[in-house]
Length: 150
Image (tube, rainbow, N blue to C red):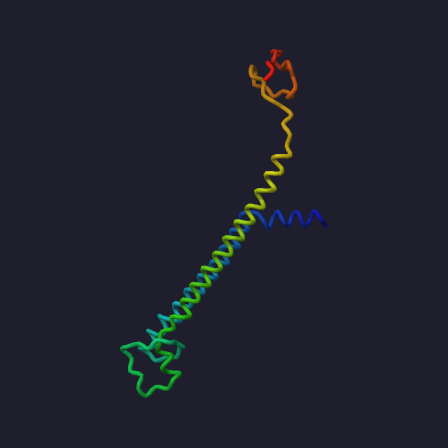
């Protein structure tokens, strides 16, 4: 069971999986901005021509609001608050993702540094024949050259 969780951790923290997950989250947040732009600005401008209902807060100067009830009047007004909220939400989500990924990358690099530190050097290269030899050898077994003490 432990091996299963190790394999799952390795899969989940793989770069491609994390990139895709971040892309989906950022895409959803950006989709909310586009939806808010459409609902808050574009639809009221179109509705001022056609007269459909969409909630809003700013009355359009070229629309005559006399004789309209409150619900119909708000359908023809711009709701900039929802758009600003969507932008703020996007920035907060992006900031949180950035901090999480930065922390995760730092944790992953710590694990790699420990593995690198644990590796002990046991071989060296012969300066004459460029063969790999034991670190404490005084003579190369390949070319039989005497090795100088460093």
